[in-house]
Length: 427
Image (tube, rainbow, N blue to C red; front, side, top):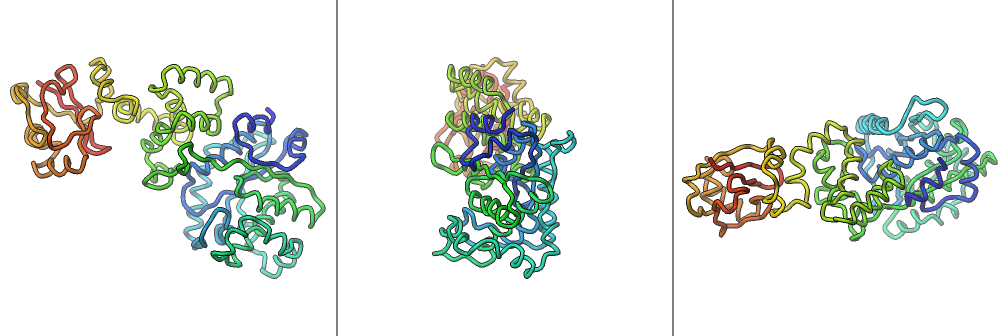
C-alpha cells in the first residue's frame, strides 16, 4: 500500500514536507514517532500516533517507537499553558516499561526488514554533557529560528523556562541521532509537533548536509466542540486499571454519527469499502448505532482482548447500549432478556405482594429483602439523588410500582447508579 494515499483517505494527514511521498515510494523507509512517558499508560489521544505507526508498517516501512526517557525529564511546551512537573528516575522508568508493553500490542517486532523497533533517547543523552550539547547541537540552530516557533511564542507572555525552551533542540537531536544511526528519514507526529519536527530536519541539514522529512496528523476534535479523549472522569486510558474495559467501550459507543464516521477511519484497520458499507447500513437505522458498535468492538478487542470484549457482551446490550430504552426492553423476547441479564443479581418477589401498587421506597427496601437498598432511609436518599431506575427509566420519590412495570408481567431490571443492576422476578 502507498502510505500517503492510505493516510489521506483516512483523514490522517495535516501537513507534510515536499518530497515526502516520493521518498517513501523508493522502498522500505525507517520513520519514528516519540511517545511521552509522563504516565504509566498511554491514552486514546496517543492511539492516533500508534495507528500512524501501524499503517506505516503495513505499508512496508520500518516503524521506530521512541520513548522519551530523557525528554520526559524536560517537558515539551507544545500545546501546554504551564510548566510541566518533572519526573524522578524511578517513576520515569516505571512509566517507560508500561508504555513499551502497550506499544508492543500493536506493532510487529519480528517481520523481517520492516520489523518495528523501540528506542529510548536516554540511551544517547545520558553520557552527553551540557557543554557537548551546546557545542555540537546548539551552535547549529539560531535563537531567532527557535523564537519563531508557535510553541515558544504562545508561552512568552505566561512564562517559559530555559528547560522547556531547549526542548525543540533536544527533540531535534533525537531526529538527528535516529537519522544518523537508525536510518530514520521521516518523523511523524501530531500537528502540534510540527515545529519540533522541522527543527530536526533543519539540524540534519545544517550539521551533516542530510535530508529528512516530516508528516503530521491533525489533532482530533469532537463534532460538539468538546475535547477528544476526555470524559468527566478525565483521560480515557489504554490501561484497563485506569479506564475499565466497560468505560472504554462506552466512550466509543457514545460517539455521535459524525465522530464515529471519522474515528472508524482513524482507529481501525477496516478498508474503505468495508467502512462505506457499514455507513450505508447505519444510515438505514441510526438508532441501532451499528457504526458506533463496530467501532467500539474493533478498538476494544485490539487495545484489550477478545475475552475482555466478550465479557461485556452479556449485559451491554441491555444496560450499556443507549439505543435500547424502556420500550425496547418491554418488547424484548423473554429468552433474549434472560440471556442478556444472567450476570445481574437475581431477586424474587411474590405476586401477592404486588397485588396492588407499592410505593418506590417500600419496593426498593423491604419488598426486595433489603438487597437493593438496606433501609427505607437509603432508598429515600437514592431516589432523591436520582440514582434509581426501573427498566432504564429514572424514578423518583413519587413512583409507585405495579405489575404493569414488569416485562411480560414477570421481569424487571432495577439499576442503582451505573454499576449495580438487579433482575426482579415475580413468582
